[in-house]
Length: 156
Image 1 (cartoon, one colour):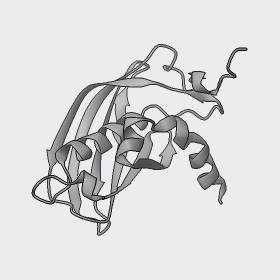
Image 2 (cartoon, helix red, strand yellow):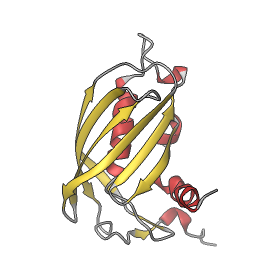
Image 3 (cartoon, rainbow, N blue to C red):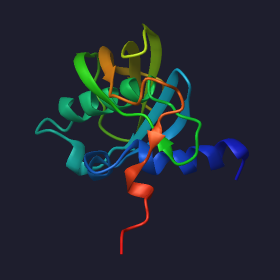
């Protein structure tokens, strides 16, 4: 495992949880200003037409776009945010393989930031694109983040 792979593996558990795990998304790249989320298409992701459901695509964009503005290098710390707006444009169908959503930070300040991104299939075809506005939660304005409460020792 490379240093980069190790860094991603150490940040992935705090990056996506719960709902994201249910869908099968995982972070494959994450650095300041950029995040990449992948998902392997399964039958559970398809709509009645046999295409990946738009909600899955919107969720992938929401995750990649928000993470692009929430990176934290401090071990044991996290940055949290919330979506203010998300615009998604569905460009083409996806039925099988791996989808890759890339989010890129475009601007903003300490609290509010804007990102854009796209989802490509494994052949490089554009499936969806989007842009969003997000708000960093209190304590997450600094790139140092805040201690992750899930890493605390349980009280006795």
